[in-house]
Image (cartoon, rainbow, N blue to C red; front, side, top):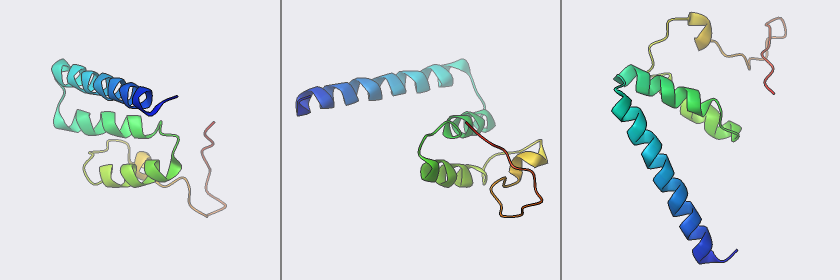
Length: 86
């Protein structure tokens, strides 16, 4: 694939991303809902390092109802139940 084709594909993908963001904003979401949406999208990232870094930052801004959501399921405590993701 030539460089110009890659650039055009990337430009189309970025344009689609902007359209999705606009759709979410036009839907009428609150600031907290924006954080929750971003957090939800982050949980679907394939890059584990990016997932951990971004969600760590978002935890500073999100209001959590369920305190269990704040716990780290990746701790080394062997007596703690683990969550297995596929």
